[in-house]
Length: 448
Ligand code: 5AD
Ligand code: SF4
Image (cartoon, rainbow, N blue to C red):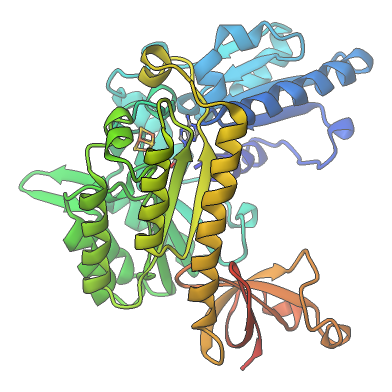
């Protein structure tokens, strides 16, 4: 979601006549797009601001804007920072060029955030956001041939640990026709892979008179667009609503990637209740069973939080157990970070010591790594279709061959990383790769 916002802000500023530079010292304006989901992400912003404060001593005309979730969360407080000139929340991003011009002209600090974040989005606001959304410049795309498309904004779930509902506001699904038109335009500019985004993208729901559109319909409509070859969606919430329909769409529509990112967060029912997740570990595993029944060969990924308030050794053992049963392709594991304003922060003590959180993180990663390694091995000798992302940053293998062609990094439809030697010109194109070696998170091979 943040990557998409960065692309959109960059596109908007370019359209408004700004030019980009990679170097902070060359810049007249610096923007920091921020995330509030864990304390660590915010700490890094504060440390960057310290650096900018230093630069500003010799360059007082430098304008610094903090945009995104942290801007919305801290508002006025962030504006007090000596390095900060503009604080702009996610809903105000469409105004960012005007805010910069105004700040430079009036030589005073500017605050633009939503006052009552849980209030219904006004029609002017959604109109502005829709226009903002449509300025996607394919040159600013994160990877060649690929684009993100927001299906929905915000979240209504209020998981007790999570800051998102307080910074991104209430859940709003974008009109399907507008999304489809946007994907058609992207396809016209050579985009092959679309990733539909939403905090809980599987709860996408748009009512138009008699008709209700859910994610399954959106996937169907997007599948009809010529030029688009793969469609992914992230992130899914483990809920019953629409679940089987979405899985069937995945099974029936060849362009829809057989990949489901569906965070469990914990395997302990006690902790899931404290997290306000509205499901038990058995219900969660039942969803995975159904997904695997309906979509043979599906890859499933998850997220976990370790060291949540009150998590005992027994609770953690339940999480390890769930990870073993779920057999994820991979999972993302985070140490619990209390977020100001959330129910967990207000009502529960952050009582798991940092070293215990760290230990549990390492242990759970090791359990998952073994599973990922086993699943990867199944690809040995097989040929997979991949979309090439570009040059691989790390040298991996086949370095002897590397003299002739560089190492490329690519992904399969179900989000597996594949590394092989090939011409750099293949970036943004599809290829077939025969897998010759595997590691837990990477498949290695040669062009078939
Ligand atoms: N502390 C740690 N991890 C968190 N996540 C969300 N909020 C927190 C928090 N307060 C994790 C969840 C979510 C992912 C995006 O970040 O696992 O799925
Ligand atoms: Fe946060 Fe829960 Fe919403 Fe995900 S579903 S964004 S974890 S509140």
